[in-house]
Image (cartoon, rainbow over all chains, first blue to last red; front, top):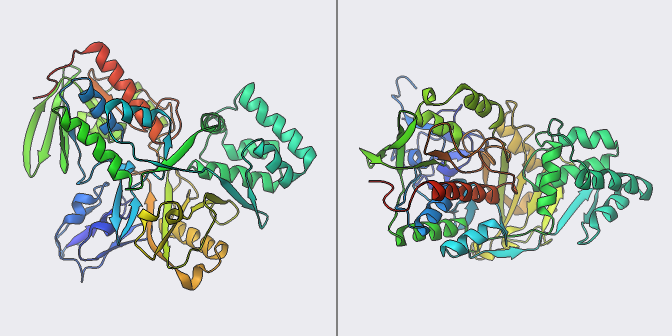
Amino acid sequence: MLKVDQDRCVGCSLCVAFCPAEALSAWGVCRVDSDKCTECLICIDYCPADALGIVDPATA
Amino acid sequence: MAGLSAGALLAHHRYKTLVVEKLPFLGGRASSYEYQGFTLPTGSLYVETGGVVERTFREVGAPFDVRPFPIDLRFRIGGKDHVLPKKGGLAALISNLAGEAEATRLMGVIRRAFAWEEPSDSISLQDWVGHHTDNENIQALFRGFVTFQCVNINDMPAGEFIRQLKLATGATAGSPPRGFLSLLTGLAGVIEAKGGQVWNGCRAKRIVVEDGVARGLVVDRQGREASISAKVVIGDGGPHSTVELAGRENFDASYLRDLEQKVLPLSYMCVSIFSQDLLVDFPGISLLPEGRRSIAMVPTSLMYPEYAPAGRHLLQAWAAPGSSFLPLDASKEIDFVVQDLKEAVPGFDGKAEVLQSSYWQKDWPMYRALPGAIPQKTPVENLYNVGDGVAPRAPLGLPGCVESARAVVDDIRQRIAPGAAWT
């Protein structure tokens, strides 16, 4: 599942703009709606802070 | 913009040039993107016209399609709107806000700071102003000015503020009607037209350093690692990133200490609001320095209708958070801006919606450092930095970025003959 590293996230909203599933929102920091996220990983490419990544749900 | 400017200048001077960009789009924090039909900034809000940026675009043959806007400043102080008159405006405005006698005294202070000796950089603008007047209107006026420079008054050294005011005197600015990305695309086009290449979505993994000399780059391109041999490597991801890529062991302790102490990112926020009705009709920059946060507000689509879809208006508010250097609750900082807007803009509630909030900080800041922090050259031979982390004394933002690129290219031209610089 997609996870936001809150320490790295800057809140720039670039991931929000490029998420095709509208699964991301940002208000100072970014948040993921796991129900909407398709794990297409486009947001990871657009994150300038390397704050997004995939983690095992069991350890999230 | 600094990296592409350096690339375009090098290509223009017949150096074989490769630009490697981690992100899928060009231009980093000087770019723009489309969102729900609106054109939004990745960082840069406007660009100086008639200065080093435009000169560089013209020199390399890149289109500089920028529509100027009038830098009319309107300050809302003490519940009233005060437009800064074009000539002799500051004295008149201070007189309006604090009375004639106080205005005469304060203009003496400002004149001395301009013409005799700049205040020290060891004092914040907030403290410098507070030292000279306890008039709250005047303090709000300076808070507004520094918000226009995209910095919090507590984070802005007094000396740097005066230098920036001097540099801004008579300056003009504007925005590209097709968005900032269009400018960067033009620079990339120059590089490619001159035989260079621009690789988007290509992550630099390591700068190769041998015996204190930069020799090239290892990149991850479409999941495959590639080694690039180069005569010169220029970092545009900030000097901290350059050090990490090249290995800290290649930098002497004094450089690393300067980096830690002087390259301190400054934060800023931008809240984009859309509405069907025009909410603010002042065609300039409205400064609201008396709210929870000091705000600069622009009815973007009034001056740039291309930035909004038909039938919609785009209003943008920029504000510095409470501090760039202390830990803050970023969500609350955005809340403060929106609450201030609700109180300041008639009809906001019910007619307007927040389209997007952007917080630029840490690795994606408003400015990586104030001008003059550290030089473009690093202790590693043939390894340079460009961008706002290494900007020379220049206007904040894009002019400083481009000046840094010009300085690096000038140095390269003196040292290395044109031709194949990478393979």
